[in-house]
Image (cartoon, rainbow, N blue to C red; front, side, top):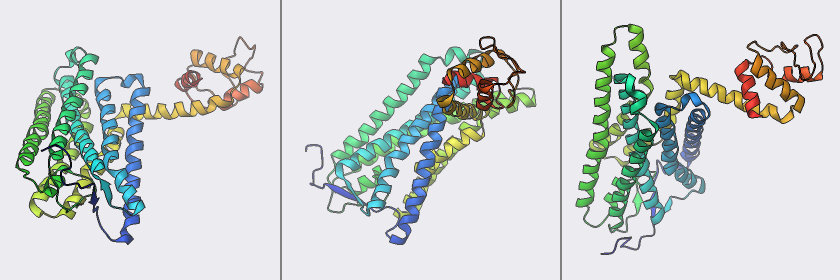
Length: 381
C-alpha cells in the first residue's frame, strides 16, 4: 500500500465548540483576544531578552526560545479556527489537516523539552553555582536547544507519517477545533493498533520522561536549598525557580487534566473545551508569570519602553542637540531638570545662566530621566 490518502478524501470538517450561530461572535472575540495577548506578550519577552545584555544568560536564552515556541504553538491552531468562524466554514483540507497535526505535535514536544532543559539549568545554577558558567556555556546551551528541535521533529514526523498510511471512511467530521492526533486515528477505517501503540509509547517516553527529569531536578534543588543556613539565602535561591515551576505546573496539570477527563467522560465536547487550557491559556499566561515574578524582566521591559521613547524623540532633535545629549550622557549623574542644563557644554559655549533654544530643546527631550535614559537616547541616534 502506498502512503497517502487511500480513500480519496480531500477535506475534513472541524466541528469546533458549538454549532449555535449566536455564540460564534463571542467565541471569535474571546479567542482573538487571547491569541493577540499571547503573541504580544511573548514577543515582549523575546525583545526584552534580546535588547538587554544583562539578560544574555542561559536562563533567559531558554526563556526566549520558550516564548518563540509558544507563539508558534498557538499559531498552529487558533488562526485557522478564527478563519473558520469568520467565513462560517468548517472545512480544512486533508493536506492542511496533516500539516496542522505535524506542527502541533512538533511544538508540543518542544514545549516539554524546553521546560526540562530550563529545569536542568536551574539545577546547575543552585546545586553547582561555582561551576555554572563553565557547565552552562554558550556551546552547551545551543546544543541543548538543537537536540530539543531534532527530537521534536523526528517525533512529529513519526506520527504524521503513520497517519498518512491510514485509510479514512466517509465520516470526515472531527469533533475538535483542530486536527488532533487521537481524533485522526479514531476516524480511520484501517487497523490503528500500531498507531495507538506508538502514540502511547511515545507519550510515556517523551512526556513522562521529561516530567520525571523535572521532578528529579527540583528534588535536588529543594535538597540544596534546605542546606542553606540563612532564610534570606533560601528565599533568594527559591525565587529563581518559582516562575519556571509555575509554568511547568500549569502546562503539565492542564495537559494531564485533559487526557484524564477524556478517559473518564468520553465526551468530545468536554475534551475540546478542556484542551483550550494547554493549547491557548497556558501560552497566554506564561509571559505574565515570568514578567510579574521576575525583577530582571521587569527592568528589561522598562528599559525597552525607554528605548521606544528615545527612538521617537530622535526624529526631531537637531545635530547640535545631539552633541549636548552625548555630553550629558557621558558626564552627569544628576537628574536633568526641565528649565536648565546642569553642566555647560564646552563645544557650544553654553553656560547654565544662559538659556537658549538648544538648551530648551534638550530639556524638553530628556525631561527628568536619569543618565541611563540619556545613554539610551544617544544609542538610539
